Image (cartoon, rainbow, N blue to C red; front, side, top):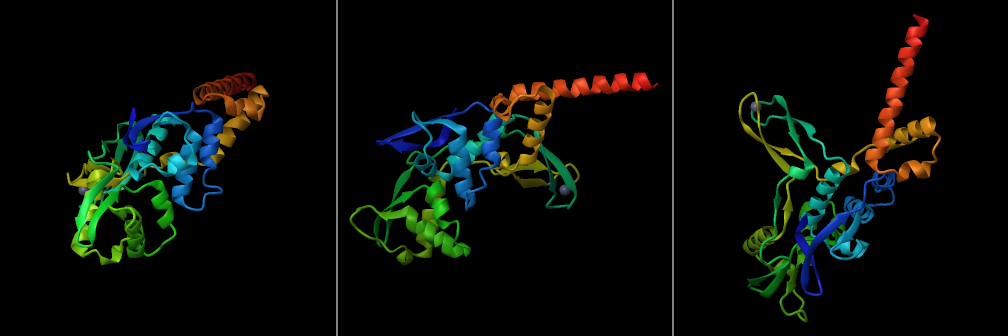
Length: 277
Ligand SMILES: [Zn+2]
């Protein structure tokens, strides 16, 4: 599997990646990625640095993860959800036409992806102020504008980062671009950048209207940390293993032991019932 965009290393695009095996340690790191992260983009960066074994042909350093395009980062977060637990997820949506609630299901591994355009990650554009270079937005760009609350101001700050003069020795003033030019620039950047699906198209079963149902790419960050602690507690009680041993187990094996503990408990309560009967 490859990134829908990729990143430049010495002038060549790299698209490969590999996640680490899923252990309790990885799940704990994801659950705790919000601590110490001041903004959502920095939480995503922390989570990806923890989860990726390889990005391109090298380690997933913070710089490399910041430098990934927004679409690649969202794609990786969706694939990480599938990597941890590839099950069908259910959402309840409210129909925009008739207002009735309805259920939609999806799998993170099956969400559609739009590959980057041929000129990604940079394209040329000719404006009245001179020839320009346009770049696809990255995690670093998201982080830089994350604290700006006013939407228009955030967009201007973002464009100032994405647009540079074709001649790197020249400075440009983004505020001198016309509204029409900005509209074209936005469309050009959107066409060039890779995208991960952030919506599902689902038909309402009551009135048949088509709805766009939002799906967060960041589902794997939303798992309550308490669940994992509960699992560690159960296995520690059942087998008297250390926290380190339990967190080092691959998720699949942890789940097997939890089922065995559950079954054992079921058998014991059946025996108790027979004894008291
Ligand atoms: Zn409806």
